[in-house]
Length: 323
Image (cartoon, rainbow, N blue to C red; front, side, top):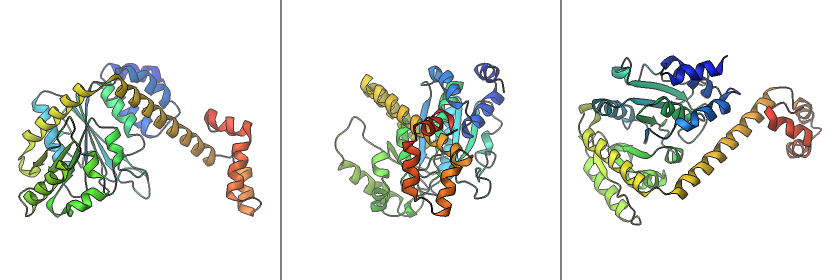
């Protein structure tokens, strides 16, 4: 594959090249680090919005309405919808065309589903890179909808500029919200399906809990929406934009530096894990695996044997060969 030609088409606004690059990133091909290095100077322009919350809260419907609102402003929008993995193929269970069908043919909207592929935390492993690719392509807004596993989804906090936590009255009491860690990650709370019983009570309880937090530059709002009826969406957009402005005003050089270091450690950790996976999938570590199977060595001894073999370890680090 001619990566330079693909990047040239991408830079020229070719949506097929965009889709191809995302596929390469999602499949974790060896070219990905070099591709991302080429694209990195182009990122940092998009507004990154995270939508998270328990299953059934209406995140996809809310995302659909946000697309329409931002498109009405003339902004281009990309959506990364994280889906649970198929137990058979490893691919996304829910496809792009199932979600947000109204916008699928809009040239100003790009929608892509990513599979979690067994990763916990609500995000797929390649999400950060895919968001960077969409940002570099020139999208004004990138919305990331997490899988909604109903458990801790703190990963989104480190990726999105504004994290919107979507709840519904029947999602449980506010104690469950605290246990899930959602109180700490929310920049905006949305109580969706607000026409149902208990919506205003949940809103009031969240506001009381938020008042107990230490003072900060941004006061987290709690909004009532009925996404299906398109109610409360304008207020949500205003709060997202207001939070973005507050965030930009409070950012320092130290914040930017810390984010770059954090991203570097995440990239390094993922790349090392990927190279180890390639080695384990091949024959590089077959002799040690054979001794493990016959009981000739225990798992800890096998791990120490790899770590203590300088040549083998360098082989793994250089690309998963581990010779």
